[in-house]
Image (cartoon, rainbow, N blue to C red):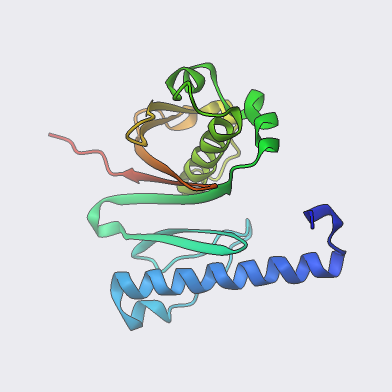
Length: 192
């Protein structure tokens, strides 16, 4: 059943279920990071709908049935932000290519990759980058504000975000079957 065919009440229930699974993944990630005391910390949403992480932690949640994931890190280790996303590869994603795949992105992609895969990879990367920096930037960004220096075969990227020139941002991505997963993180600048 396509999403638009789901009755409104079912859609709300579906989204509530995805949200609950995302919060469960966040609790598990917090437990793995800092034990039971950290895992029971409240995770309210702020005015923008972003999770409010414990003060010593940065994190990100991604959820889309049937999976949910979370990434967390200690600020004391120099991590300023993390963002995570996962997207299903579908032929309809190729329609996004003109909006989310910049010319340098297309040039970095494996020429044997389908247009749907390329569009999905760069959509997921841009979503992860946005989730990584939005909690500190608190400003909307255009797709073209996020640029990648991509090694397609290693699944790694250096990330440049126009409003944050000079920030140390990195990303990784992988495609496992029909799902692309992306992770972006920002670290503190190391000054000599």
